[in-house]
Amino acid sequence: MKKLLLFLAVIVSFWQPARADNNEYITPYNALLKQYVNSGEKQEIKTTLVNYKGWSADAKYAEAMRLIAQVKPELLSGKEKMAFWINAYNLLTIDLIIKQNEHESIKNTGSLLSSPWKSHHFPIGGKDYTLDAIENDILRKMGDPRIHAAINCASLSCPDLRAEAYSAEKLDAQLDEQMRKFLQNDIKGLHIKGSELIISKIFDWFADDFKEKNGIVAFIRKYSPQVPENAVVVGYFEYNWKLNGNW
Image 1 (spheres, rainbow, N blue to C red):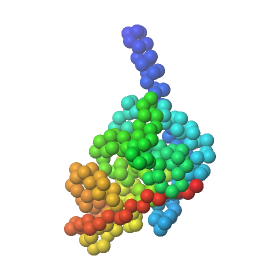
Image 2 (tube, one colour):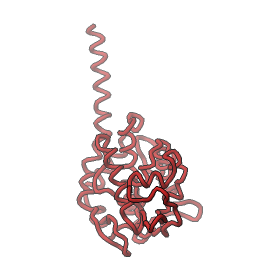
Image 3 (cartoon, one colour):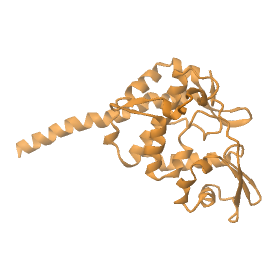
Image 4 (tube, rainbow, N blue to C red):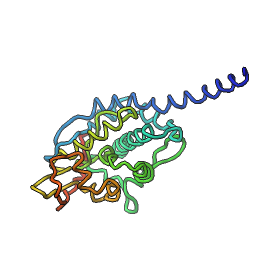
């Protein structure tokens, strides 16, 4: 019995630090979000804007990047896993904008042969990930289309960057709120005119993700009850790729 207890104690001693490390990045990251992400308007689009200059000069930025690189994603599951990868996508996107010193659009950070989302690699837990891999190979495969209102591509037409880190404990409420807020924005999320709808291109690009939810209109009505049952999508907003912030 003593040998068994000793063995279990050793296992716990190795397990607990790894679990703790997976959450340590949240403290500096959350502080950065609260300090440098604020509601605003740019090019007549209401959104949350990032103070990239302030973020880049803050010591908490380097700390957040150091800690997220140490996370071991293989130890995560369920809502904890989804919350982590949403946070990772958003933090790494900001890191991309800062490292590339990009002042106009994330689209400028790509190359002739590769998009911005495939061109840059970020280390996490000893492996390299692209933003494309995080979105398409990890998050979308979790089967929850609400992630499209949570991940932010540093552009004005993206769903707003939440000024708070996502957490397993609050994830469902956070995702629901993000989707409602996105659809309340009649410049980039949803515009209703009678039974006709103009919606974000995100619903077009990722239409397959919403088929499991009885289609796009049914999904939208869940978060925007004012949409008529007989509503039809007649068009999509032009996507504005201008940077969602200032230097």
